[in-house]
Amino acid sequence: MSKAVRIDIPRQRLTNQHLTGPGLGDPVAIVRRLGAVQAQDYAGGKWGVGLRGEHMTDAMVEAALDNGSIVRTHVLRPTWHMMAADDARWMLALTGPRVLAANAGYCRKLGLDDAIFKKSAKVITKALTGGKHLTREELAAALERARIDTSHLQRLAYLMMHAEVTGLICSGARRGKQFTYALIDERIPATPPRSRDDALAELARRYFTTRGPATVHDYSWWSGLTIADAKKSIALLGDELSSEIVDDTTYWFAGDIPPQPRRKPEAHLLPNYDEYFIGFRDRSAILNVVKRMSLVPGDPMFTLHVVSLDGQIVGGWKRSMTAKAANVEITLAVKPKPDERKAIERAVQRYGDFLERSLEVTWG
Figure (cartoon, rainbow, N blue to C red):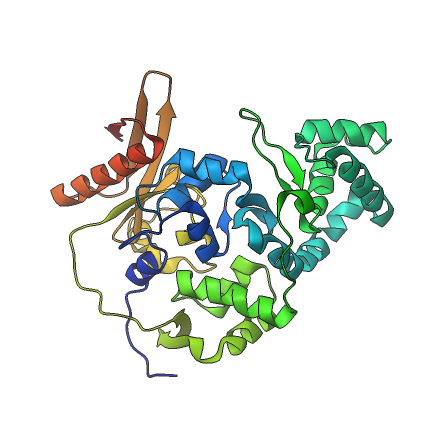
């Protein structure tokens, strides 16, 4: 381990996440490199992928989800994530047991036990077999016909999550604006299983390559793994990772930290659960402006998507879309300089290119 130095954590993370510099060529490559992209906000998740690509459009990401080369399911902490299809089985096998253990107490309160999960799995399998893609409401109806109570929304949600986390189902093709489920074994070609140590090393490799510099606790938060498993993952990677100490905290990353020359301002319109900030337990490195302005999490700005300027969170944005017009409203905690304002306007233009629509900008 080298001596303590000062590294520009925000700029390095922007580079490693492909938010600056060359983007990646297609949606599957982006999701595979990141390991998983949080996506309970479906439109925001797609934009999070598009931000990291060259000339990426919403239609391109949607097509990858529709054809099953990217799947969306519950994994890691858990919440909805997009993953490359051939990563789904090993990632679920690694992180699923922790999710099931975390859910166990609440499942008992909902009256869900192993017998009900086993019965519901049979019903869901029968309903989806043959390449069928069904909505949650259609699967709920099948469960009700088998006398499995789904009247409580949380009960149905945990039944479906259990089926996802155990590797039975994943996202199917969308039916208009409706989401569907499909059987993993029919949706995703078979892939060789990984040993647990291999899976631990691979998940950590994806994380620290794209989120580094990051800490053990950051990785544990993102992955849902224990601190012990997080430390073991780093040890398994050996010389693939380097570390530096900043303010008595050890940060891990893949490769070297290159010089970060000053450049013209760079702005990003980040979706509300973007990996640039949601992928870390400690987000203090990108909150210098927020702390200086004494903003708190309850501030209305934090109910919006996020504006980043040179890696620092400086405000929020929201969009309004109609058949005839599209608008992006920008709300900032600071007054931007002229070149910073232009950088934000370029970021809005990039979002418009992704949507293949012209966007008007309103400054809040």
